[in-house]
Length: 269
Ligand SMILES: Nc1ncnc2c1ncn2[C@@H]1O[C@H](COP(=O)(O)OP(=O)(O)OP(=O)(O)O)[C@@H](O)[C@H]1O
Ligand SMILES: [Mg+2]
Image 1 (cartoon, rainbow, N blue to C red):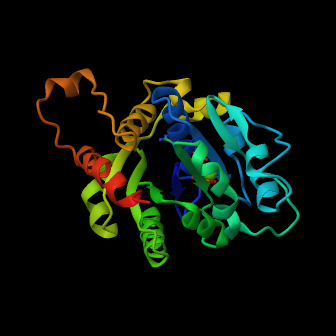
Image 2 (tube, rainbow, N blue to C red; image 1 turned 180 degrees about the vertical axis):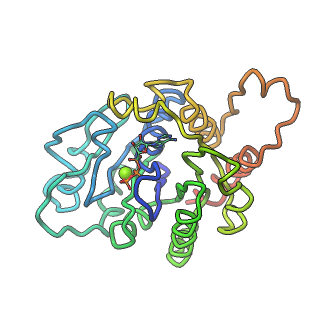
């Protein structure tokens, strides 16, 4: 039975789609998992641009609108099954039916990754309700942190507390929020720290997700470590890390806790 993970943020451009595509392709190609990746950013879908699906004939919009079954909207790309979005769909569709529409596919996958909309409305709620676990993406600055606090509150109200924070686009730590400041404000563990990665824009330009475009890039490596926790594997260590007998970096310790907690609590059903 698939574990459904929603990647959310109440802020545009923080890296939700980049990270969703990276998580999915890495799970499929480096951990041999069966993965479904769904564009749930209904009004501004662009997962197709990251996954090289440019003019899909069947999309999540058709699935929600009951024009097609979820299975027939699947496009196979980079080892991942993808349900992309429709750029222009001139009809109101029931976003909150997402969980029901994806239900028949749950048995076919190990993971379902939902790339959320940043809009604080039914679009994001649809991702929240369809997910077993939520990860919130933030950048280490005050404006984004305030959005992250809001997202955490909303998720809690909906009975879907956020399982972890992914800090993305770390540029100049001296002038940015620290991991502890972020954790203390939101009361959620940081499970990944991703630096600003010059390969992100290159991979988007080439329409090849980062773990396949450049496996050794900082983003790909951190995503691979996070996926080790999700798949209950050991993290691969760099040469320098392997020289240290203990690694007490906070996000690493948090991933170890996530590994245990995930299957016993988050995915207990
Ligand atoms: N770690 C990173 N380093 C550098 N650039 C990044 C990083 N992560 C993402 N980007 C770039 O940031 C831009 C926005 O990323 P992305 O589309 O994934 O954000 P998003 O949160 O999904 O946006 P939206 O809310 O519009 O859906 C893209 O150009 C992407 O290549
Ligand atoms: Mg996006």
